[in-house]
Length: 221
Image (cartoon, rainbow, N blue to C red; front, top):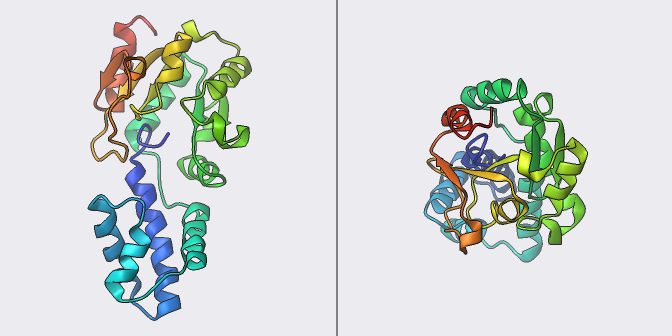
C-alpha cells in the first residue's frame, strides 16, 4: 500500500500538519511555521527525531511525555490522502482478472485509516494487518502471506506480490514461490537496499501504470 498504491510522503505531510497544529496551539506558535520546519527537517533525512529537532529550532523543549503525545497524534490522525487516478485504474482493471489482497505492516489504527482514506475496500478481497498478528509477524515474516493465501484460496505459485520496500517486502514471497514485482516509485520513503539475494524481486517497474503490461509479458493475465 504505502509507496505502492500512493506516495507515502503524502501521509507524512498530512501527519505533520496535524502535529503542527497541536504544537502551535500548545506553545503559541504559528502552525504554518511549525509545519515548514518539521517538513524541512524530515525531507533533510531526519526521519526519527524530527519533533525534537523542530523543538530545538524554536527554542523549546519536548519532554518524553510530550513527544509520545505527538507520536500518538501522528499515528491516530485521519489522513488527508487519496488514491491516485493511475492506481485506481490499475486496480479496476486487475479486479476483472484477479482476487486482490493486501498485506500491510504498520501501527494500528493508522493503517486502517489509510485503507479507508484511499478507498481500498472496494477493490480488495482480503486485507491482512500484520500488527494484529503481533510485531514479530511484520514483514519479512511469512505469516501474513500464509493467512492471505488461505483466506483467498490460492497457492503461492499462482500469486503475484507487488511491493516497494527492498529491505523486507520480497523475502517471504520469494521463498514461498510468488512472482514478485518491485515498484521503484520516485520520492519513496524507504531507500534501503536489498539485504540479501533472497530479498531481490524478480521484476522491476518504475510506475504502477507499467504493471498491466508486465503481467501480460509474464503470462499472468
